[in-house]
Every structure is written in C-alpha cells, then in structure tokens.
Length: 212
Image 1 (cartoon, rainbow, N blue to C red):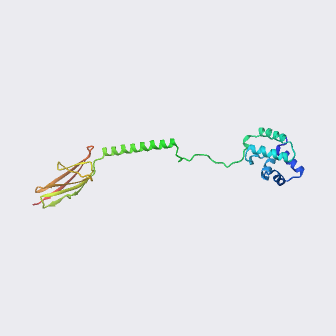
Image 2 (image 1 turned 45 degrees about the vertical axis):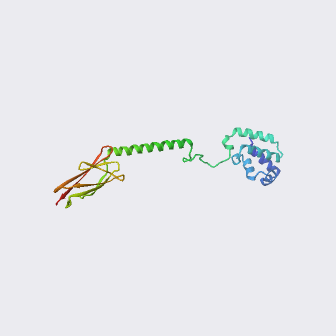
Image 3 (image 1 turned 90 degrees about the horizontal axis):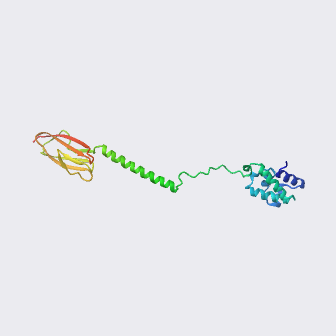
C-alpha cells in the first residue's frame, strides 16, 4: 500500500517540481517536505503541524487534500504514536534536590531541632559524667617557703565549688580562685577540691615545706 509520503513525492516528480519549488510556493521548508515524503513525521514539530503541512502540500500538487488526509489518518493508526512525535533530546526532568519546598523546609526545621536537642543532651551527659577541670598555678609542689602564709591560685569551671583544706572559697565568673594558707613548720599538705554541680570531684594536692 502506498503511503502519504509516496503519493506526494510521486506526484511532485511527475509534475516536475523540486522541493525548492514546493518550498517557494507553500512556504514549507524543504527539509520538512523531505520528511513528509519519507513518512518520517518525527522530524516535524507536532501531529497538528504534520496534518497542516500535508494538507497544503496536497493542495499545491492538485491532489484531493481530504483524501490525502484520510490516508494520513489511517496511516497514523497503523503506526505507533511515538513514531509521529518529534525527536527531542533526552532530558531528565528531575527537580533539583536543593529546591526548597514547604515539605523540605519543615523536614529541615524538624531535623535541625532534633540535632540541637541531641547535642544538648550530649553536653548534659558529658557534664554529668566528667569531673570539673582544675589547675593550680601556685604553689608549686615540693616548694620550700620561709613565709608563714602562702598563696593558693588556680582555675576551675565557673560553676564549680572549690575547697582548700576543707574551707570553701570564692570562685569568680571566669573560674579563677584565690586563697592564702597558713603554714606550720615542716611539711604542709595543701588539698584543693573542685566539685561540679553534678557532684563530680577533682582533687589537686601540693606539699609545701615551711622553714621559719
């Protein structure tokens, strides 16, 4: 069975027209005319354009356009629809992952709050398990002093309490503390105990000799 493209091409050749002649008369580009004659409708933009071009081409050649269009409709029914669609680049129309939508925003917000809550719990757990930091700047261990009073200077956590030889002393907001201890002749043991608000304890001791 002859196809629409074959009928149009044979009629054009019999009448002595070139594709350029048809293009000049119908304003249909020659490459589209060649696609129609080859029944390669995928090279045309849409099925509606295919029907329009075939109608105009048939009328120019003096053929019964309604008959040609009927052939076209029957031919289209016999050909898979995808073969009539224009070839398009294969593009994955996927939304960018980072495109912000209300759902994604809500998930990010909830996720952020969960992370913050977990970090807070982790910090609290760490404070519960770890004793406070404690460093003594003075006096040095095994120091021998000729002065009866000696300074005790150090640093700990700002929320810890400090006792020097079982006497509570003030801890400043930056964690530093200061005290003086009276020495007895011989070796004196100075014990500094820092206690966190969770009850964890850190102890530092110094032995200081006193020679009047």
